[in-house]
Amino acid sequence: MAILKIARMGHPALMRPALPVSDPTAPEVAGLVEDMIETMEDAGGVGLAAPQVHVPWRLVIFFVPEGRGGADSMPLTVLINPEIAPLDENMEDAWEGCLSLPGLTGLVPRHRRIRYTGFDLSGARIEREAEGFHARVVQHECDHLDGCLYPMRMRDMSQFGFVEDMRRGAVEQKAEKQEGEIA
Ligand code: NI
Image (cartoon, rainbow, N blue to C red):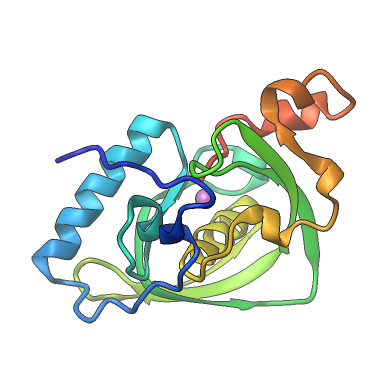
């Protein structure tokens, strides 16, 4: 097990599309996932994508903490070669953070309901419907696989800044709610 270095916004590792994982059951995939879990826990995030630790594979991990964003909790999930389809046109705004943009937060529109598919480490197919925070974290992580960071999804850049400083302003409560929702 090892704690991996997390790339920050601007690093080329975050900008390029990741490649499909040819064999989800390969031992090197399991080894990477083990290190990613340790890295995510150390950093206090709820999700992490392989490109964030300089590995260009289509692989993300995430979990949904109890009571977060009104969503049901979801145990740690390893999602390999994920695909996402929105289930309706509804978008909703909520505050996000990202381990690749430490200390920052922004108001990001996401599809409220999605279906996602992929594979776990045993090669079994995963297919789930998700909404709210669960849907948001999956969209956020999978965006990393296509070189997209959350500020690129934002519509209003006045709603982007340092968590510590935004707490001073009118968005105080929202920014506080955001605490811990870093992926
Ligand atoms: Ni992120």
